[in-house]
Image (cartoon, rainbow, N blue to C red; front, side, top):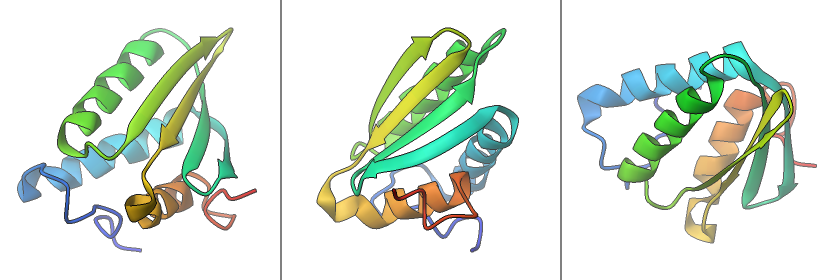
Length: 113
C-alpha cells in the first residue's frame, strides 16, 4: 500500500503536508502501539504505551487530524500505563478506517475481530 493510499479525498490537509502526517501516524504506531482491535466495522481501538509525553503527543496528533478529517471521532482514555485510543468513522468513511487499521495491525484483516 502506498503511503498516501489511505488518505481520503475529503481530507482538507494540504497535499504537500499529507506525507508528513502519515509519517506521524506511522511513528506513533511503531513507537507506542501495544495492540489493536476492531470491535465494530466503524470502530478501531488502539492500545498505546504510555510514558513521558505520550498523552500530549497523542492528543496533539488527534486534534490536528480532527481539524482536517472531521469524519474521524477520537476518544482517548488514559488507564495506568496504557492509552486507549478509540477511532470511529461514519459509514461513508469505513474504507479509510480499514486502511488505517491495516497500517496499525498489518498481520490481520485490518484489525477486525
